[in-house]
Every structure is written in structure tokens, then in C-alpha cells.
Amino acid sequence: MGLSQAKRGDCKAQQTSVSPEAGSRGCDPGTYLAAGSNNGLIEPKKLPNPVRESKTHQELHRELLFSHRRGLLPEHKPELQKVLETRRFKQLKQQQESQRPLTDLEEELRKRHQMLDQYERELALKREQERRPEFILVKESLKKIKLSGETGVRQT
Image: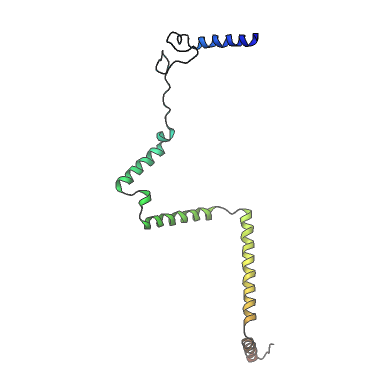
């Protein structure tokens, strides 16, 4: 019991030390003074917005105002102009991509892709030769024999 009463006494002492004149104004002891009563205190100023103070933001805002006055809002651009801008953007992106050196992984993937393409071409040629009718194959073999017969050497 003695400890709790001592704590209460400390709290009352702190409350009166926070605002000694609060009791004289009719406020409860321990309450803070209203913001209107500044006895030589410095009021905090509003912090500046770094976005509005930056040069790039100001230039962007100026450009948007100028384009608004001319009637060229970004969302109201003609369709052709939008298409041209997207095409230019894609071309620029492709140029930057082509100038960038290939990594080892990309190089290996490119080699494998080339090998697969070559293998597929060879398979396609074999399929075409298998699909040919037999009389065309016989005719081609006869042409080879006929041409080689003119030279005096016969090939089979």
C-alpha cells in the first residue's frame, strides 16, 4: 500500500510541474495548454514538398500546362501519333538490346537454338524425299545415268 501511495504522490508532483498555471485558469492539473497560448514558443513551420521544389517536377508541370493550352493532352493524342511513339519506343528498345553484349547463358541458348533449327531442316528434307512418288525418284536416277553416259562413265 505504501508503494502505491508514493507513486501517486510522484504523479501529482509531475502533473503540477507540467503546467503550474493550469490550475489558475480553471483547467485540471496535468492537462496541457491549448495551442493558442504561446508564451514565446516557436511554432513549427510546414515542411517544403521536395517534389514541388525539384526542377524536373517544375519543368514537367510547365510542359503539361503548355501542352494543355495548345490542346495536346497526353490522353487525347491522335491515333497515328500514338502508334508512331510506340514504334519509336520499340525500335529504341531493340537497339539498346542489340548493343548489349550477350551473356554466356544467352550465347549457349542461341547455339542450341541454331542446332535445333538445322536438325529440323534436315528432318524436313528427309520427309520431302520420302513423300516423293517413286516414278520421280526413278526419273532422277535415269537423268543421272544419262548425264554420266555422255561422258562415257556409268554411275549407278
